[in-house]
Length: 174
View (cartoon, rainbow, N blue to C red):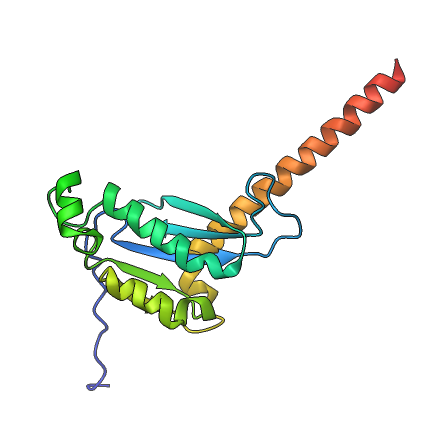
């Protein structure tokens, strides 16, 4: 009773865009995409703005390449330092200085725990938070956005198919 302490509410620090992001991979899909033949998608979600950035992947092993592409995009467009990074500074200081101190939260899938992926995050000075396995609620932001995007795609395909049937019925009735 006296020993119980009240838990202090967690105060979230105001972050800059893409300073804290969630990442996950979805796939493989039965049918590759029309453009690029992608069977997987990697998704990054910004905690502050809820912005979503998606990348198509042909192989699951492309996670490393796509993450590097995303970190480069973040460094050029949303540096975590107070002043914007000019092209000259970017070339001189390198990407790691531009996004130093950012956090990337992922699950514990094998492509996120490999030595190559860890070296990539170390090179860019990115803090890597991993959630325990089978805890989708901790990466729920990404999981919900995947679900929303996939449901939207199914709805569009269903509407397209229904539209074809509707026009066929209309044409056959005249």
